Image 1: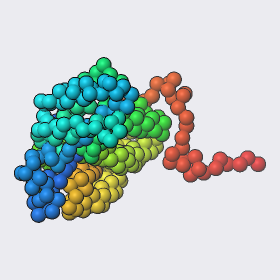
Image 2: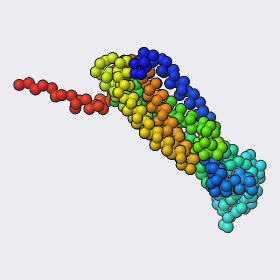
Image 3: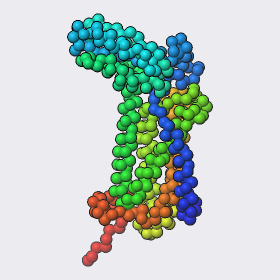
Image 4: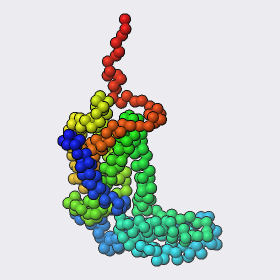
Length: 371
């Protein structure tokens, strides 16, 4: 197999790229959110309670949001006008099924109301309602006064957490990929090798995200896993998947590249070095991946949907990385790059520290002693 890859690298590169591209398509429509009780099987008591609440009071009754106006800095003479102004602003809010009248606390410093969405807590319209209330409606309701506004409650807290994760996830991915790029660059002293590793690992993770979106958000096979209907991707699942899978992926990457680099230093035959490394590492990587896939796939028997989501995502990630990436893309790209894979500009080579990752200096026999 290693020799076939060496003879036709473009075919293997094209095949692997097509597979990753197809699997990555769903990720462009990913919707982060929170999975509520409405996604549980109908035999669960929380699901039955959710359905009863929805039929009696509307789906938004399962995720009320508490609206708070702090008017402690507003003079007593202006508070009645503020209450009237705020109540008017809370009338006819888009995506709101109902907003209760504002009620003052015993000391009169705080006004409180409850907003109910027209949709379930996990629906995108509920998230839009939260953003609209916190960013536009409430600030506009107290405009011209010293009052402060807040939206709180479980649903609001989940929406705020989703917003934080959505903003930080690209930064987290960028930092981790950059650090991995630097590690590979320092260890193997090859610029294109480091670029290749970073790009392929990101593509591998994107493909695994696509599998999760297709199964859970698009509903392709969700009922077979015990998921009722289509659900958003739990906000913290992509971050946890990235942290775990990127570590495993880099482990396989370093293992394979170490053998390629070792053969390259010994023979200076770039194409044969790739085939040799694939021959001696493919079985080990495959066996290790099968163990991890089995472990992660066991999570699918859990009743918790988030655990199922993590299990499927991690199992798919390892499977994709150990097959499509390690057996198709990496050897094909390394074969095509040839000796240029280990090239680095002279100024960069001078700046990079020398790290003996394989312990070659200690393994080498000591020089002969002169009499």
